Length: 162
Image 1 (cartoon, rainbow, N blue to C red):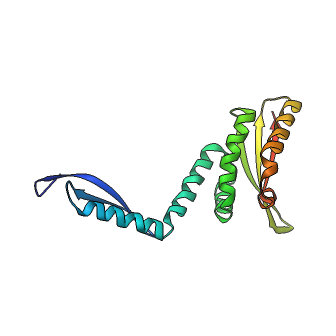
Image 2 (image 1 turned 120 degrees about the vertical axis):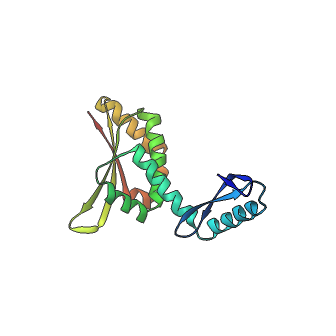
Image 3 (image 1 turned 90 degrees about the vertical axis):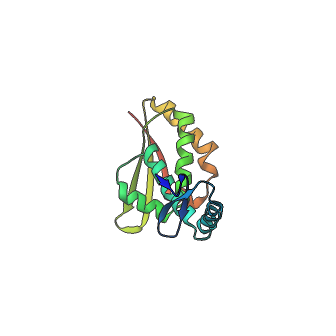
């Protein structure tokens, strides 16, 4: 596509509070740097980066975990954003101990007390019960033990030997 004798070759991403827009600028156009700079400031000012980051991290979680109540879990994680990084970190910690095993996330609510809602992270594996239990104990002693109590109230980690 030609524009006044020049090819459009540069793209910048402009971010506003509600929309993502792509802008094309002519090669050599001095407004390119100004628009990129203005977009960067806007991006940082309206906290869009946090929102995009949360949804990026949620997408990563859907790649790492098998989720039984997909939408309910996502809503719960959005409401408890601090859990997202913990679950991403947990996947790495679990893989280091158990190898590449299926990881499930389930959301459980006590029907008598709706305020009590927890995520159960279930490690499915083919290890003997004793080996799996030793690896789970190691996970707790070296990693999960050091997490904040508010995290431990919302996440339970267990294993199921198949």
